[in-house]
Length: 232
Image 1 (tube, rainbow, N blue to C red):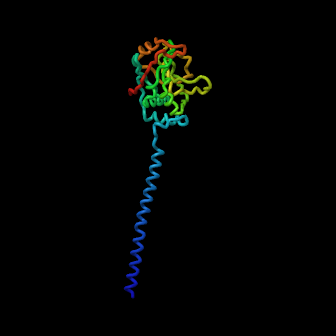
Image 2 (cartoon, rainbow, N blue to C red):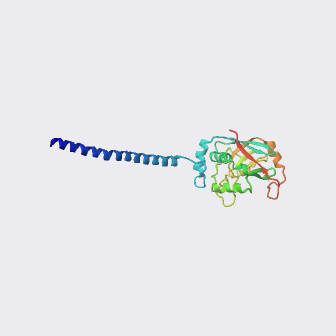
Image 3 (cartoon, rainbow, N blue to C red):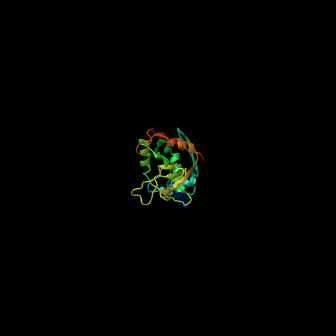
């Protein structure tokens, strides 16, 4: 009788372990799956897609982008020649923005659309539909001014264009820029537009561009195509 009782007890134990062992394995797999899912969600939150810039995250986005993209020298290429620019590190948001737009090749669809004789040469816009599409893609964001007492509108200064009407905070356009061509400078624009760089070579190219025929709106009669590339 004792022998039968022991056999019966062993059979019960065997059935118990067989029933529970697969369930433990399934539970383990379920836990691992949940852990992987949570990890992927966390990684997705941490990841910073460089295509997420919009009007709601402008400063934070460009501050982060600037840290990962420290370049300060670019070149504008035109049929009249090249213009090399140095961007200022102490104007971080505007510098990062210019580097960002250069790297996504936004400027390569634009033209030098304003030539104000003995004043400025302005670029970064066009009537190209792709250009307008790019602007809408990023929400036509604006940037807070970054005025610096030692960054003046001297000859060759690079600055951000902006709207003057209904813009009391003097917010900069991220897409349009101008270069001061007046040898006397344009100091009446100090603390009105953010200066974020300067020409380091190509003043002769600026002189050639300044001589083109323009319409009443100062837009060149013949479009001046340009491309901008990173140097270092």
